[in-house]
Image 1 (cartoon, helix red, strand yellow):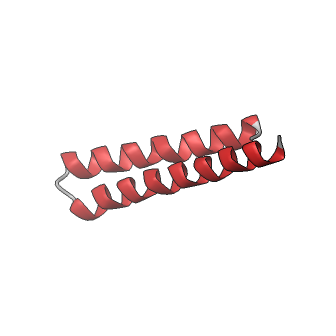
Image 2 (cartoon, rainbow, N blue to C red):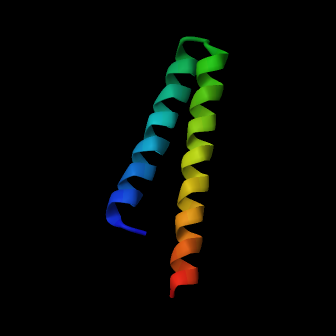
Length: 57
């Protein structure tokens, strides 16, 4: 996985955590769930890239 991909996935995950936190503070369940979904997507993308790295070795 390239450094750029890793940074992008990390940024997506952090963005999801921020959304989730803002949703909790503002009692906005939709925003909270959206943040959780963003984090899950970032984790899946990272897992896919990690798997690609293993296969390429």
